[in-house]
Image 1: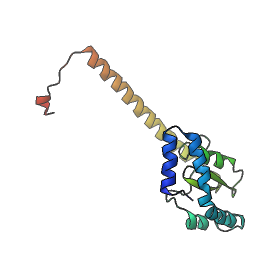
Image 2: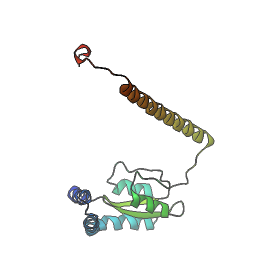
Image 3: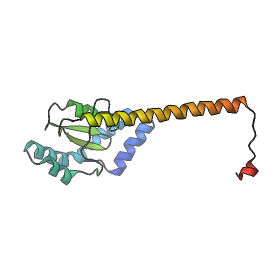
Length: 160
């Protein structure tokens, strides 16, 4: 359940200006506008209603789906990471308050990683790191050659 655009924009503007305390205060004061919907969702969760159906009904963030949150995850913000890491068991639910509004999180399942998945990820990372290292070395060599040898670029002949 998210803040309206104006509220969210004001919070972001305050953060950009380095006024985190003011942004936090605005965020906290603005939660009242979301409280009724939040209480409906949480009463459904407590009553054992289907979590997926509740999220379908009340979710305002179309990008919000099942996500893997692991220690060190930074993509979703510290509030969501801390909330997710605080849920102890599968089926547990908690709420994160962010600059966007309320995020209701459920520990859906333990992550299961097969040996094949680990192998695939390892190879993908190895390829990525190798490619980056090659690009770094090539750039360093090119910079060295540009410094070591004099050259001129004829922009007319190159049609630049």
